[in-house]
Image (cartoon, rainbow, N blue to C red; front, side):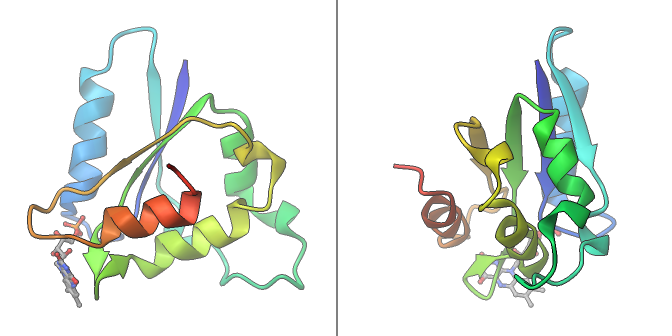
Length: 122
Ligand SMILES: Cc1cc2nc3c(=O)[nH]c(=O)nc-3n(C[C@H](O)[C@H](O)[C@H](O)COP(=O)(O)O)c2cc1C
């Protein structure tokens, strides 16, 4: 099983990235977790641009599942992660894809709710 893991933080010492790295290190042999580390290079979302230029779409198409771990900034998910999701949500790659969402902070209260709404997880 191939899992694509995206941290919503660009910070070098990010706790959310550390969580995904730990999951990768601890995953059983049959689960391959790949961290996507080009979130900061994705262009700002613009519906006028063909979404097929976004390499992340291909990476998602090759995956069986998606892990998202986002910091909470100003009571929402990080802007870079929201930007990536704006590119992805209209694509076929996302249909019926199992997604697990994480946030490392005990005091954060909105990031996961925001991800739920964005991904329409009920
Ligand atoms: C500008 C700014 C805004 C933040 N806003 C929130 C917030 O609304 N709620 C919260 O729980 N934490 C907030 N934080 C704390 C971050 O979520 C926290 O530092 C987190 O560890 C960042 O994720 P990372 O370690 O993966 O980079 C904020 C931090 C910064 C710098």
